[in-house]
Length: 219
Image (cartoon, rainbow, N blue to C red):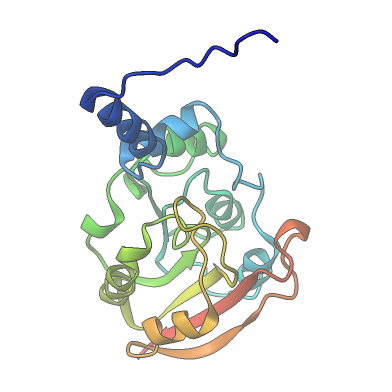
């Protein structure tokens, strides 16, 4: 029988550093990394249209002058639907310039001053309605209490946070980060009345049984 040659690689501190830097880069949630995802079209979470639960909620709104914010808007299909249906006071925030450029290329009449390229946690203002669509699940889980506090500070008295949350484990090391309804209740209950907080009955097929529809009113 022939001899089996064993190859050994010298492990140096430099190689270890490069190894961890590679994974840190892969899982980075900074603005450059998110922007690159939009540049490379690595946006598997984007379904390409306004999600059904949010569309049906929007269709029930009669006051089209309310001030609406969509944080972490991405390609902002919800904003496109709102704007094309006469809502005149919609604001988008994302720290990916490419995402906002994508939206503007589709909705050319949308006012530039309502496109905010910034970190959500640094913005100011007051809003009547904040729409949550795949943003909460994209931020690091350690920032969830900060998210709730920021939402609370941005809403007018009686303002609402409406949208979808994943009610499933999902991933621990990268987005989308999941959670449970009990966990979310603990986060939101100090600041919000729960108008609606239940499994979404009209989610898209791939998310059926994994989403909660929320309609939370600021206390």
